[in-house]
Image (cartoon, rainbow over all chains, first blue to last red; front, side):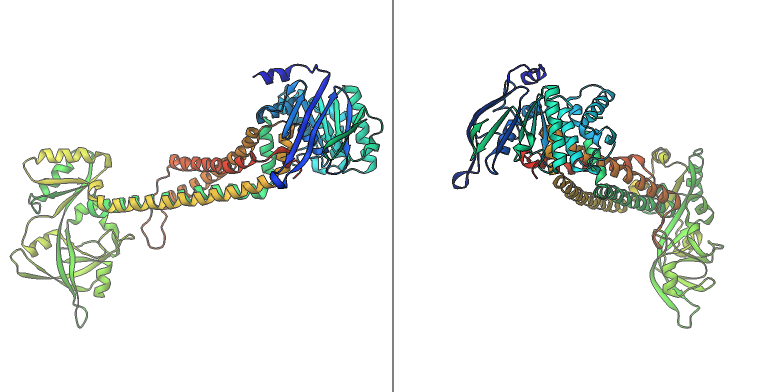
Length: 239
Length: 393
């Protein structure tokens, strides 16, 4: 399969995300709502980008389209040179599996799994190496996020900040080119928020992974490469 | 371990009560079918056993033109000299009589009682009729009579009572003879002579003025020799009008009804399995509903719809396999217990159960298939979940 082969090729493009005229309309007829209205932008490899805006401005919708969790009603989305606009569900899953890591506001760990199993999940999906090799990678990434000692705990035994660190570890363990965060600090206290933000910025620099973060609290993130400001489904400005 | 199996197992075992309920539903479905089959197959086998023991032997020989007129000794001698095949052979003569209990001041009368003439010595080898005597003894003399339990009850007869037997002989005259009750015959399933009276065959012959017999009963060491003995007998008496029937043929009408009953009961069991399947569907739908967000996360990380479906199909397979294993153990335990304990229900005949592990295993496999089939719909439902919606659920 062409996509599979392309997905295996090392990341090489300068622009990792390209959105052209992205439009998303929910519902039909009189009850339709325009969540995104002809949004065009691009994000370059290794950037740390925030998407901000008021509630209902289309931030999460845009992030879901970038993360291939949702399809645009119109427009085109290109992820690492792959035009993902018309990909099948199966191929979109492959792109997510190999290219994208997600961090959610509500952590979204699998409560039935341990910390190690949660983090190992993306590696098991791509079937990278033996189980001992995968375990070593998991230990390394948990070490990086400061949770090496919690490795065998059930994920629901952790604090909110710890769970979000596990979510960060899970998003990073398979070294995806793109890490997407949907209000990743939204459920955390200020101390934990700062810890997670510092961690993401540190990893962004260290591993050169692209981070695209939707947030209400842009000031918490301090200086970032770029900030896309959305208003009523349109890009108001890019700072 | 494949990640889908890992997730399937983890999800399932964290919902222990739901999983247990589903596993028990499968196990009960398997168990009920095994109980039905074992019990009713045991009844059918017991009926065959009692028909062989009391009524027909393995082979019953009659004369197409009426009664058998060949001398008893010749026929029995021929059969018993066929080597170690025939365990015993005997003849019986059947008639109908009216019987009075003359002990009571006003004799109690029973009309139209089937009366059977037997050869006591030969019956011991060829049948288990002697074992049906629950009070008193078997025939001790030509003037002794054994009453079936129902006849004895009707007559108010006890051991030692004098009874008068009246029948019509071949010339149309009434013949009367006094007997002494020496035994009461009763069988658990009523397949013996509970509604008859038993006397010595020579006494009955004297009374009705005939020297023949109604049928000849042959008991074999091995039932599989039935056809061989039948052929030997028919070849030896090729010029006669003998009719030879094996137990399958002579008991066919009774067994046909029983087998239809078994098939119906099994059908009821399979309907029971169907209701268990609905139980599993409900439980699995509950699991799916409680895991919508997790399904969204799994999709977001990179699983496609088929992967998620596989997770839930695996859960159905695990439930089916565990339920099938439990059902197999319970079913085997019951079947072995029933086989080794000569199980009876109240005063019914004791079941002749044969433990058939292949049947129990096949039923368990059906339970496994049911578990998988019941998970198809819940698994398919997961494909309708959009990851963007599911992660926000």
